[in-house]
Image (cartoon, rainbow, N blue to C red; front, side, top):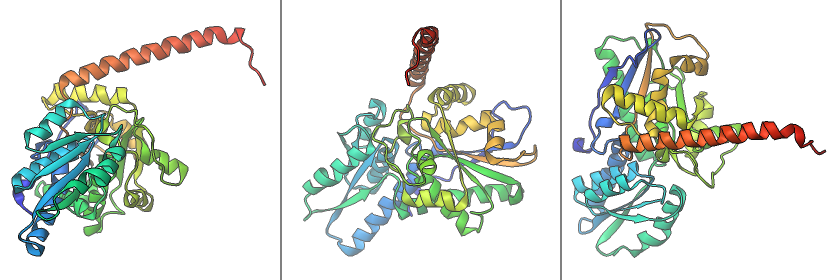
Length: 360
């Protein structure tokens, strides 16, 4: 592992303006080279493949191909630049121009295709990767979340968390849960892997948070089987994947991890509040987790127990680079307009309902 591909990030107490309740510790993955936790797993994957290629075929050069809703592609571009290998990133049409330009700024080629990640990924694997000059280059496929090497990179986050707790003389029995945003399941699998390594996977519950419209995990759990979304309707585009990792789905069931879905409007409000409080811009995908810092009562309901004032919860501030404060304000206005339109429609429906008798 090349240390410059990711950074050890601090685990800091954040009161989230709560006067009482559990101690909230925030893992600052905002500080990674790409601005998100993706630098850990994606950086580890690419560096591992580059090292393997040097031993197997020293005369060939790796070419990174990454499909992404944004942050994984940016992490791939940052790592590829550091390792001096070319990189092509395929993003969907839902990806914000802001992050596309960031990816390009690190020297990667960007291709836009499809309405969501799955379509972008399929197009990349079936069409773009085949065009590479296989005499000079070896394709390195960088999946955004579903690869054991990626999970291994993310798992080092647990090592850092445990080290931080030990340094602060916090007993592990006082840690009552870890909250993380759930998109495809890569971050979650990494956390599980790290906890397994220390025999803590069955002792420390993980709360997986999704937004309505990108809630593939929650929908799959309710159905009892993995489902695939045809369309992502949430503003949290970084959580927008049509499918999730099958290993993550099995891990959630095996360890009884909690699945929670919150509305876009709640997430946007949280992101704006967090930005105002900290001067850190969090995109909606990250705001899904931060929401529980401001609403610890919700967390107690999810975990099914009262969390004492001297007990701890870790929030993974997963980061992200696709959103600006202006974007958040625009999203907030959009949500307000949508809510008002829905409210007016419902009110009208209620008024006309008595006039229109129900049919059998």
